[in-house]
Amino acid sequence: MCGIVGYVGPKEAVPILLAGLERLEYRGYDSAGLAVNSRGRLTIKKTVGRLEALRKLLAEEPLAGQTGIGHTRWATHGRPSDRNAHPHRDCGQRISVVHNGIIENYLELREELQQSGHVFLSETDTEVLPHLIEENYRGDLFAAVRSVFPRLRGAFALAAIAAEEPGKLVVARMTSPLIVGLGRGENFIASDIPALLEHTREVYILEDGEMAEVTAERVRVARVDGREVEKSVFHVKWDVAAAEKGGYEHFMLKEIHEQPRALTETLVGRVARETGRVTLPELGLTGKEIAAFRKIAIIACGTAYHAGLVGKYVLERLLRLPVEVDLASEFRYRDPLIGPETLAVVISQSGETIDTLAGLRLAREKGARILAITNVIGSSVAREADLLLPTVAGPEIAVASTKAYTTQLLNLYLLGLYFAQERGTIGEEERREMVAGLLDLPRRAEATLALEETVRALAEEYHEKEDIFFIGRGLDYAVALEGALKLKEISYIHAEAYAAGELKHGTLALVVKGVPVVALATQPAVYEKMLSNIKEVKAREATVIAVVSADDHETEKTVDRIIRLPEVHPFLTPMISVIPLQLFAYYAAKARGCDIDKPRNLAKSVTVE
Ligand code: M6R
Image (cartoon, rainbow, N blue to C red; front, top):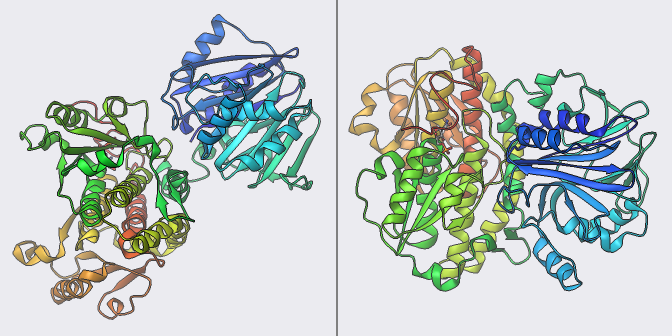
């Protein structure tokens, strides 16, 4: 996720672009930059670091001009650096581009462009855009972008300016958001509404496959095939604070709703529907190296640790390799048995959690190969790892982790399927079935979000309870742990998760009349056993809320409330079944009047021990 802005009109562009970027910093903040057309010459100023660093640079080296584009970056391809910061430009320095999203086929485009003499300055996927536009540019930027569009695969939104066409912005959208703000004698473009609210409340929201040519006086919107589009104006009613949260009351709710998009973007370029194959070229591992691993050790804290617990089930089943999962704070002090044949998978949203980082360093000392799954590719964990498999969730602002968890899970499934494919531990039919299931996940996540009202009603019904238990078996147990953590951390309700088969070994003593028990029963292999456990707690007069799969019409005969998930491959269910638990925690906390985005005693990133 990155933020893009653009301005065309009679005013100086720089202050408007900077103010817009400031409103978009929630979309990314590892580097920032601007390009301005100053009397037929394009000038770019960009720098690694937060927007403040760009402001400083511009104070020392001011830029003048009335047409410009700006960008605030959240790195995905290429680490945060001055060179990788946007805007990017062509060889002739006549075209400048900012971009949000991923150009899936950038490697083949880059190779083709290099062969025809184009010189690249960065490691980004974005840089293919100005060079491709340069190849097609005959004095009409709109036409050039239009001819490039069909060559691009992936999810993206872009904005371009050309030296020879001062007073013009050209934008295009495929999946990633893009809006055009309508002013008087001036116009704007942006990734999101907050960037424009200071100037206008009237916007066009571009749809996938739409492009726009924006001048101070006119906005022309067309489909990529050239058909003109008559857009209707969207009138924004939100204030700035609400707009930053996309109209949601809290960042947490916004981030819960961003999960379908985050899953889509994390999948881009990694799975092929036609072949049913997974490719993780960013790892750069050979088949021989993949075959050499004898053990996997997962190291993480909190929600990332819970993702690791799901990862254990997934990787062991797909690879038939032993997988250990450790809380980083335990791992670092327990002299673990790992060595050169171990792959240490370090999971961290922020990439800065001190215990996780110490675990990584210990694993390295012991000779393990380190693979990081992180959401921040410029982070310490990302930098110190040998291999990097980033989640593409975009910045997560709420302390409670939601979209980072689901994308961490997705990366663990992708890793498992990729290694299984290379090690020959999965049959083609099964692999194809799972890849199809993965590709379908964003749609299933969207369908799960449609359960929001049902879950809200349940949370409002139970929010005054002092204790809530979560039970499950197998993958469901791992998800139950995450459901309980979410509820504890933001609603302060005492919540515990138990492996359902363990209840009678002690904790069943806590189950008394009226205690809510959230029972996850989505796994066919242990379904009968789970049903017995549900009956066990019902016999103690607990109130049971069951989370079940789409085709389960049996559990509802025993329980008090039911949450039925949309149809999804049972093995992939954790990425879907966690969503109602996140919503339950959110609405319970809301009903209790808690400070949801900033729960007491907690910080987003734990950088001290
Ligand atoms: O940034 P990290 O993923 O390393 O953070 C680990 C935990 O601190 C984090 O997941 C924490 O448990 C969340 N607040 C849970 O929602």
